[in-house]
Amino acid sequence: MKKEILVIATGNLHKLEEIKKILADFPYDIKSMKDVGLEGLEIIEDGSTFEENALIKAKTIMKKTGYMSIGDDSGLEVEALNNQPGIYSARFAGEPSNDEKNNQKLLALMEGIPLEDRGGRFVCAMAVAFPNGEEIILRGECEGVIGFEKKGVNGFGYDPLFIVPQYNQTFAELGSEIKNKISHRAKALEKLKKELTPS
Image (cartoon, rainbow, N blue to C red):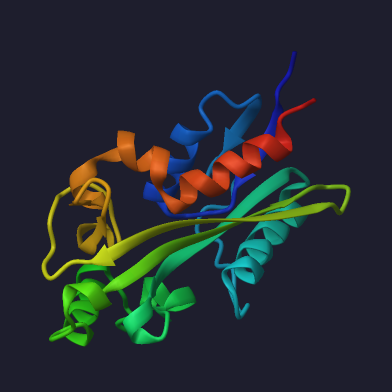
């Protein structure tokens, strides 16, 4: 039986890898934007929430390909910074952005803030756009604490600074096997699997 095509609306290879691992047992043929000839396509994310941006990505790719598409928007909310960087997580330190600059800015802003006030969460909104016009939007969150220094070499983005209390390690120290079970993206994808699994 031919599997239905599902396109992941991201150019981020780390994210694509993570999503493919989590959906490995899924009954769909998962394609990247590159696989469907849309590599390098710039999608203007002008929503004001993670959910709006995720849906913009999913709908853009679905309209261009005619296939069911998943868009995700994720980022870090830090309570002491009024939930910044939020939807601006990827470009927190300005353009051109990179993980190193973003992490340095976060550490600088958090300087002098004690451990008990360094709470935050990773948020992932996941949207699916179907060719028939249907939409699904789901959200996953992972609570944690912002560390005082970077630790670990796995992961990307703010992973080296995000400590998961029950393991007392950063996402970058935990490695993908545990991270892909407890992360914000994993939680959103688990909800999505339940929604999309044929009954």
